[in-house]
Image 1 (cartoon, rainbow, N blue to C red):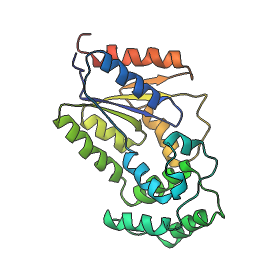
Image 2 (cartoon, rainbow, N blue to C red):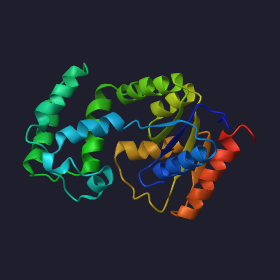
Image 3 (cartoon, rainbow, N blue to C red):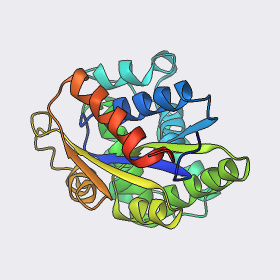
Length: 229
């Protein structure tokens, strides 16, 4: 069975259940006939970059293990590596304040976490220089996948320009919120994620329950994606 949309993108704040829903939808589509699905993430390239900035002893850890770590150590050459990336991408190097911020985290004077690193590099550094940098990177990946007749599944939408891209690509957009899990994170990306989720074509406010997530994934597949209904 061929889905009605060329892809589906999930939007929501951290711990909203969007990645879990994405996995469940992927499994259901596979069960319906082995549709060749490509899993993409706006933060995919960002995670690769951030792994280059952490100490080598932390790099073997999985994303989940890094998220759970209370503190991570950064590489002593994190500043140089980030500047190298920025220059190669055609973006300005770190300014004095940004350099000092990162150096304090490298020295351990200020603790660093994986979530802080992802938010700071992805939003405060890169998106401040070019709001569409990560969006354009994912667009290239999505178009290549679609050219190969793959169904695209995006699990980590947050920003309005990310939503605009998914609408341009004619993807089904699904907003997810889990009020119990939203802890009031005041970072720009979390505030924006909650607002953007509410603007999606479909929106769910869900309790933190695996059974409810399974039911929701089933509804998304059968009500919105499969041509037979």
